[in-house]
Length: 299
Image 1 (cartoon, rainbow, N blue to C red):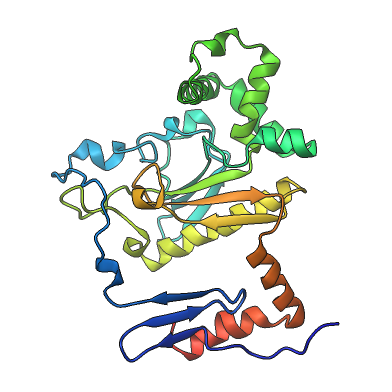
Image 2: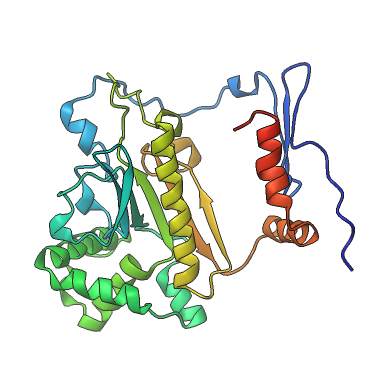
């Protein structure tokens, strides 16, 4: 029996001392932000700050705009149009990767949390037809074949294997190994800039707050589209976790703006609680996700 819906406490409360209390209207999770708490001494290695070179602006890490070949084959990219808008291009072939500049790219994570093997072994997941066609087309191009071989060798080396073992693998073994590059369930949405365009030294990292509203909208739209695609591509995905841990203290490999999207075969406790609340009040997202924010000037 469903209980009558009754609104909970305010999602956002500012206390007299400056403390901010936030309560998720969907899960009930409560977070307090206390003044001065961020000043506590946490030890992090201090990166060397130096003047940015022209090469570093586009080559600082594997996510940078001059190093498209350092990541697995991208699934899609967003490019800027002359009129100031953005458009998405899907399945860019290796030979055309540098024909346009990607403002944002969707690429497979080289080190998946839930690997393709996980889905294949536990659920019988096979490469979807669309991903298989894209994979075969990519590998049929010599530039594409060379790209995926180089990335596969990098992954083998990182796993402690001999990169040269790639040559001794059977065709079937190679095919299975490369499946994760085209049909995996863990993607990364990467921004173009490592540093802001006006940064002088390496402290000027580009983050979400340095994007224009239009860029941020394009960034979010690509993430939303990728999330929907991960659900469609694998019927065993029950939940797609989307998070942004782009700095090293948060566990990121590179200090380069990116989001991660991970398909998971079960829902967590918070998602289950949220579903219960939505079933009780189907208008919950409008009331507390949009209306509340609009009424309180939070948009």
